[in-house]
Image (cartoon, rainbow, N blue to C red; front, side, top):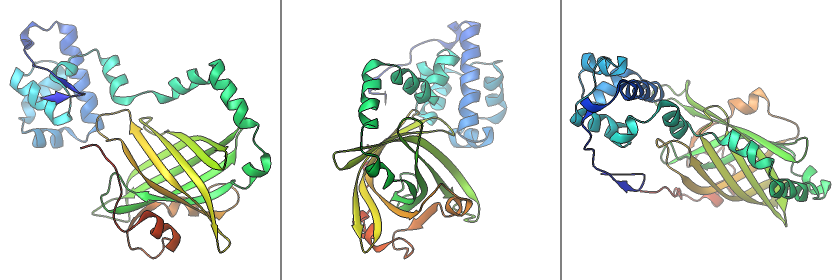
Length: 288
């Protein structure tokens, strides 16, 4: 069995675990259940008796090695990881990009880089400000194009951006199943626009983008590539084409947020230029 690029055999006798390890296992299991749906759903999919599973959650019983492996397989983890210290476990599952980036910004090299970005001509920066529709193929809903509400604004030291993704419920499209919010920085360098941002609701993903400005028939577009990597094992890294279509000056409005959704590939509300750039076949690159 392979997880995180390692092949490991689970040979530990769970009866030998100290009480602290048992407590870590139950805390880790409760946390995973909170992240991945209800306990009943986990029991049903993992095919484990609900009453017995409740004993695992409470720390009253430790699963047999076979059940530990079943549970670990269900969540895509190694059995050993299920018994790791809870704080370390949460850090691995959640990630913590914000603290990392804050520390990076204090480094002299990063401060010098930001100073270089701040030296760009303001006329170039001003032309980028405003609200856009952001389009790319969805890494969550296959064969759907994701339209996010995207805004570039002037921050205290350099350009910043924010955008919101909303995924409708498959069974009830009028309801929202997922909402992701991103905040980051924009760097115009040598005719290209570089972006880096962090998902700020669950704090579990970082994305990068490289864009170039395209102007046709007085419409303003930016086209390029975006790549994302999550801090959890539940979401695959991805890379895909991305297109921004300028909507209006200012900041995001409620109407902009309501406009964020997923669309069929042939949806005519997607500008022709965007559909031509994205193509009629999803170009999403996701590790197998």
